[in-house]
Image (cartoon, rainbow, N blue to C red; front, side, top):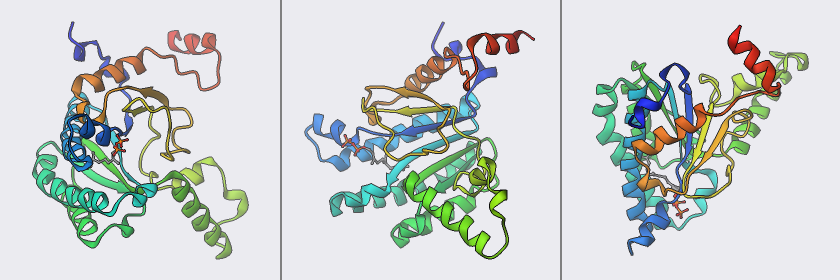
Length: 251
Ligand code: FPP
């Protein structure tokens, strides 16, 4: 049986989040500049998006540029931002053909004007698509997002639009950048690093974590299938006992 057929389509994660890592090391292995790795990383973005949509995954969220990435050399930031504009522009017809909606989370207003405008343009042009939502985390970090959320909720309290007693976990989730999505059931990180790097800290409270040594440009459809099969073989207990979970599935 091939890998894809081993996936139980009735138990697919609705939302998969990916920390795409290893572009720089991949380029170095080929004796090339880091930006060559990012260029090839775009192919892996396409491959992951296509395969997730084909399977029926509803939300795919990719960590494309972190708040901390602004500290990289200027030439690399410029190349990444240029690549973003070109790739999004080029892929817009394919997103529409595949009924995929583009979305973004993060401090996107801090992006260069050209990148910001292209992003908004494609978000608008794909807004009617409903097969899968592809979210790019851009100038994103979880601590930034949580700080913004605390500020927003505080200002609502100050303006008497909210009471302190209204604050619960659901309300906090509804003020995060990801308010329109379910929490990811599966978080994948490539390149062998065992870190979360400030990504979706609130949202991954109960996510299954999957780490692969593959460098991002080498991440293929089969690697996504492997991760989903691994996820489906795990028991998600949410703090309950194994016996309680088994009892609920047979009843
Ligand atoms: C991590 O590898 C990757 C990034 C910081 C950028 C990811 C960007 C892309 C895949 C291309 C553009 C994306 C889209 C959505 C069109 P790294 O540079 O940290 O690699 P290293 O850890 O080996 O140095």
